[in-house]
Amino acid sequence: MSKKIHDVAIVGAGAAGCAAAIQLKRSKIEPIVFEKEEIGGLIWNANFVENYLGIPFGVKGTEFARLLRNHLQFLKIEVQKEEIVTIKWDKKKELFQIASYENEFHSKYLILATGTEPKKLAIVGENQLIEKEILFYEPKNIPSRSLSRAHIAIIGGGDVAFDYALNLSRKNNHVNIFHRGKKSNCLPLLYQRAKDSKYIVIRPNKNVRQLGIPDMQQSSRKALLEFADGTSYMADLVLVAIGRKPNSIINTKLFQVPIDKEYLFLIGDLVNSNFRQLSISAGDGIKTAMKISSKINKI
Ligand SMILES: Cc1cc2nc3c(=O)[nH]c(=O)nc-3n(C[C@H](O)[C@H](O)[C@H](O)COP(=O)(O)OP(=O)(O)OC[C@H]3O[C@@H](n4cnc5c(N)ncnc54)[C@H](O)[C@@H]3O)c2cc1C
Image (cartoon, rainbow, N blue to C red):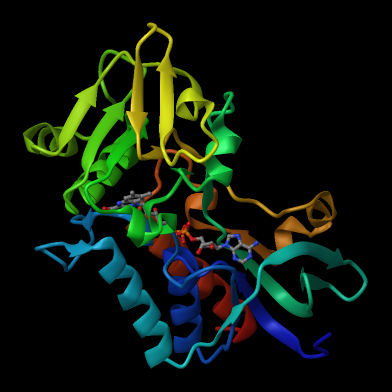
């Protein structure tokens, strides 16, 4: 257990957490930052970022994530590779107790920037395909050896599903997008690009009812998708993109944190429901860091 009391702890090093850390550093405050996976967060999965100010020709999601990582490294902001599992509020000492599986940390201020996690389909066969590493929720988790001329089924009809399709089709994979409704609900720009791609087929009115392994062959590396209309489709890989939900580790004890003193901040995709974008997360991070630094530095 570390006895040091940090001024500010940040959980999550996506755009929101990174922006907060960078802005705090500008005010000479050294935050402690925790990240359970990779610095950069969700944007590792994005095909192409075209709406970030100052990058007129766009940049790959992976490249944007690397820029975030470089920015922290350049400013010598350390990120601890820890998954935070519990957070408690010590009312007497007015401190947060932040614990990973192995370590405990303490801070006066806490920024939660933990983003979102994918929603599951919750249908028969889903877990079996996860175990066999045939079904995924994020492209970054698909082993690269599986990504060559594969037949990929993407389930979902929003921006993320279409972005994933464009991303994966670049690697000569054949992608089918299956969505429930008559119309997809993604940006027209993404729809048009997918429609124009010879590697992507958009299949509306396809409500997946069940997933499985063809002919019950346990050694098979394929997935069978069965739809409500009685049709089916065989795929090498399935990617589920039916929406995301807040990735919160908040527990009831935290509700005792005095609201008026502003010790606790929830920022970025974690709280931005329909407005989940890099610039919004980054803006949240900067604004929060400015609030905290004005309290700590009394400016
Ligand atoms: C396919 C796709 C394409 C997109 N394209 C664009 C685009 O073109 N333009 C745009 O503006 N936005 C785009 N977005 C949205 C953008 O990625 C998000 O808005 C942004 O990444 C959110 O940043 P964040 O920091 O709030 O959350 P995240 O990026 O999700 O970061 C949260 C971080 O917290 C970490 N974390 C979670 N729980 C814990 C824990 N318990 N302990 C430690 N660490 C934890 C996670 O590992 C993660 O790294 C896209 C999203 C997707 C999925």
